[in-house]
Structure formats: structure tokens, C-alpha cells
Amino acid sequence: MEPLTEREIRAAFINCTKGEAKRLSVPRDLTEQPWEDLDFLGWRDPQAPGRAYLVTTGDDGRARAVALRAASSAVGQQRRSMCSMCLTTHSGGVSLMVAPKAGKAGQQGNSVGAYICSDLACSLYVRGKRDAGVGARLHETITLEEKIRRTVANVAAFVAKVGTA
Ligand SMILES: [Zn+2]
Image 1 (cartoon, rainbow, N blue to C red):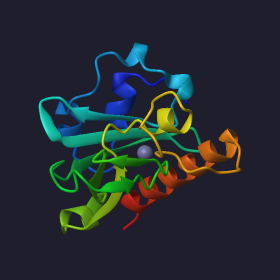
Image 2 (cartoon, rainbow, N blue to C red; image 1 turned 90 degrees about the vertical axis):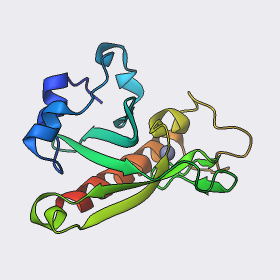
Image 3 (spheres, rainbow, N blue to C red; image 1 turned 135 degrees about the vertical axis):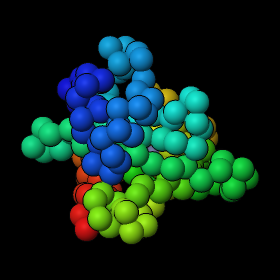
């Protein structure tokens, strides 16, 4: 994806208030992120480990960011579970992330949940740039390009669900 600036990321949040988007933690090392290998940028709030965020640019090139709450990592620590974005299997490295929906639906308490790699580094697992251990990746006959496209589609579908009433 194309590199984004802090200002672009803060302006891209679809499911929190302007004030929250202004205050939430955005990585300081944005210029050092491996943008060319990212389908989306995801990060955890170092001050509040239960908070996570992701930002992606859709087909239209518009950035959309989503604020997430990660369930406690103590749950399912031993169980192997699969990330629903990149289909990597980890032991204890997948978290249930819940995003309040955008707008009125979110204010009424509606949310969307998905199992996502706890470090939100799906793009790197798909490309083999980060290792999740033995048996983490399915043996598939599809190409890397197709796996990337699938991850992008999964993330886009998740963001779209957050954004629709
Ligand atoms: Zn993942």
C-alpha cells in the first residue's frame, strides 16, 4: 500500500469520534513501516494493550481506519486458532477483535468481531516475512499473489461491515 501520514490515518477513522481519532495512539515510526509489503497497517496501543487499530486503502485509494478492542490474550492461549484475514494459524497468537460499528449503529452498541493475528501483521505472515511457527500456513496451491488478494478482500469485507449500518 501507499505510505500514509499520521494526519491521513487520524482522518480515516470510520468508527470513533473525531476527538478519539485525534487522541488515539498512532505509530511514531510511520516512515519506517514496510509499506510495500503491507495490505493494511495494524497496530496495538502500547499504553492500552486491549486497543488495536488498522488502516487500509480500498480499491478507490481512500484510506479507512478502524478502531478495535482485542479480547484478553489469556483466552485461548493454548488453543491453535486461525486468523480470519490471512488464514495463518497460531498458538495463542490470534485475538478476537471487536469493532464498534460506524455511526448510529455503533452508538446503539452494535459491533463486528473477527479473529485477527494479535500483532496485526497478517501482510507479513502471508508473504513469509514473519514466521508464525511450524504448521502455521496451510499448504496451498494458489500463488502468493492470490493469497494477498484474498487477504485484501477479507480486510475490505471486514472494514465494509464496520462501515455499514
Ligand atoms: Zn492474520
